[in-house]
Length: 120
Image (cartoon, rainbow, N blue to C red; front, side, top):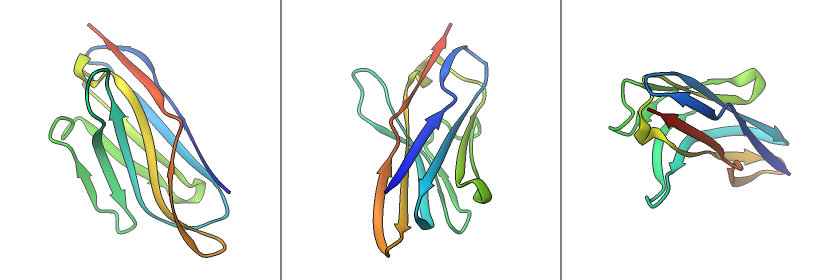
């Protein structure tokens, strides 16, 4: 069983910062790709950023240069540092992991989501 827990969401004023965390627990052999997604009201779910096992990152154009995805391998924890937040960043943010668990099998695991609200 693999579980993913997110934290760090909240209410912040525009131009402020927040840092989201995503911690994976369970019998994990390796994490191949970690992604942050968001889902805003009346909008489709959007890929925000990804980080793969080779440290390659990818960002959506809407967050590029403002958000940074990173990880702490020892803690199986991933982060999304969000700077210069805008009202359009308001959404529920989800952590998604593509990983290999023990006994050996591929898994895709989603977190429960954490709400980020940016006020003007």
